[in-house]
Picture 1 (cartoon, rainbow, N blue to C red):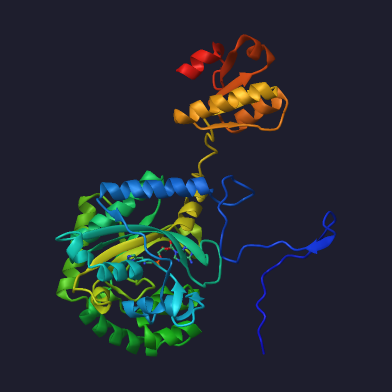
Picture 2: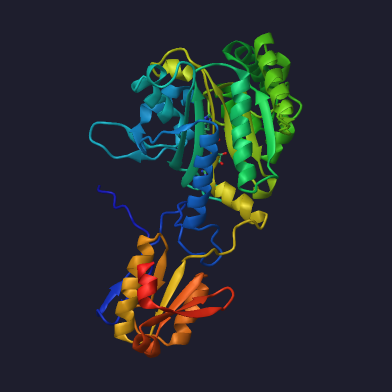
Length: 443
Ligand code: HAM
């Protein structure tokens, strides 16, 4: 039997002009349009996203990170290989893309793709003796149930440092995330850190935890499975009952080996040294399986269940598992949608900004043509310029100039045409000067 896949076409309405019923389309659940204007109660505009991304680029420059642009489409294996086979993300949330021969998916996160590229392009030889510092921006895709702060297509801003295992590098990358948040005005995030140990101490801890969990009754269905497959993840469960049942279980910090404990102490010392406030959350384990040692999150409780605005940590074995040298990396990714929600909760979504430098106002076709030449000149000088093309009342044109928050309106009516002049009106001070068109064009 052939399965017919449905697109969500909205009830068809009669289009009288065409004499037929036509349906409208809606975007896929868990995806978003970012429009140039604030419409209804949507949070954020395309302009705000671009501004935030530009700020991220700028902060990365301060820390000498270079941009890497990786594909949106990757082989499923890279996420499975990168030590993540047991994570919810890989088991349940990847969007498979139909292909004759290959198992392809839309990337659910950036780290595995960056590591794949680092190994494939031998960046360890090409870029630096010591550290490869990369940042990336773009859409990620996870088939999760959409809710506030959780989408199926979402945008991440991420950074990775690959090369050495030095906890001061963890401190520096946390400092970079913190610097970025303060530059966009998000100063209320709580930084939580923890160490989930290396494979040695974590293996020992997992055994203890499994045994303890065996005695706990009443866990949710997912945690009953996790208890055996990935016991640390029970601490990540959002079910209140599970949180209550697991709150007195032993935590990893009691089992860290000397090396891991020492590295966590350096991270804490480094954060203190740079005056970056943090709390140690002994149950912070992160949802992806590739982490070792330091893990961290920047959290905003006001967002609700999806409170993690930025998550990251150190990874050691995945680079080798993906065919690379035994190098260690550390990185983070922040969710742009959650940044927007956090900014909006604090009333920090910017009020509409100036859209244009000059707005040109005309009354006759001859004036319109002169102003098209003026516009060309102004744009060549680097100014943004807008005008109506259909005839409109002067009052309506000036109203539009104000709506667009233009700095200056240039007005040409019949009198200006007869005198070969233009009126230059400063829209802030309302001061208006008539000047010679030849002078203006010649300037
Ligand atoms: P992650 O915790 O899965 O880590 O995602 C990082 C951030 O992406 C989250 O803190 C959240 O802000 C955002 N995010 C995740 N899923 C969604 C979603 N469904 N909707 C909206 N936002 C979401 C990683 O992706 C790792 N690759 C981070 C990393 C880089 N670790 C080391 N290097």
